[in-house]
Image (cartoon, rainbow, N blue to C red; front, side):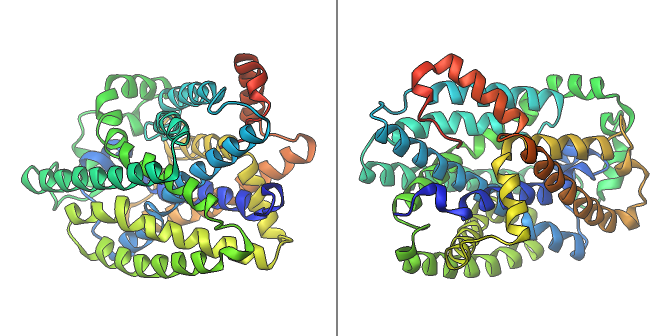
Length: 389
């Protein structure tokens, strides 16, 4: 197996995953009723918006989850090589990630994934101590639990629709007695998140917890199976076939099926596409081990993944919400799709530029530096072998 430090695809895939999650979240930022409208309002019925949303929905979050599992496997290998007991100081990493997610939830966005990742990472860190057969059993079992929960949620949506499916997102926003995303201050949004903790944290994060653990285990399994190695070509080919088939199915269901069936794309077929992306990028950079300009920029985003994730959410919040420039409230409904695409195309270069400039002077991102110092103080010697998940 090639040394992980010589695999450019690892950081590039993290960078793709980070910017890819923004491609999904930017639609939430530009929703006139924010994340509340995404949860309780109707899905967009325009073919163009549905198609554009579907291109990214679930794919890059799935990729990020798989890469997190890869990172855990790398950290376990580093600990084993250093003669340290696993998971050792990783427990403190999970605690720090949870605290980071908690702050991110209250202060920045209510659709944060970091708390869920912290819990899932803690669970998987201990599962990695078991044998590979046991890990596969857990992975398949949790995938089945996830499918069951997804089916129950789909049936609930059919039986108890949350909103008038004939209404548009703009009409839903106008129907709100008070819209904190348009009319509230930054502090009002903090209070709104605190007051609706169960709405924002109970359903989706808890629902996808089994899937997240399964994807972390899948990432660790793929890493051990040599998906990033030159002799992993047969595995990558199978993943590419799965990804292509999954993409066709995902787009067809996501654009044309009913809302309840759409759930199976966001938290189902999207994962197949994630695997295809991983295989494609891994194979590309094994054949071309020296990244070009774009590869280097994506790699830099991957190196500061946590900081880039928080930064892109801060920038999008400032541009879209009422406490900032209120773009989501000012843009005409007929121009919302175009404005959303342009916003994404403007934010990506800013994130890449920020990562590039920062890394010209320092080795780690700002949050990564804070993490490293905090983890070393909390975990002591066991922190020496810890990498970045």
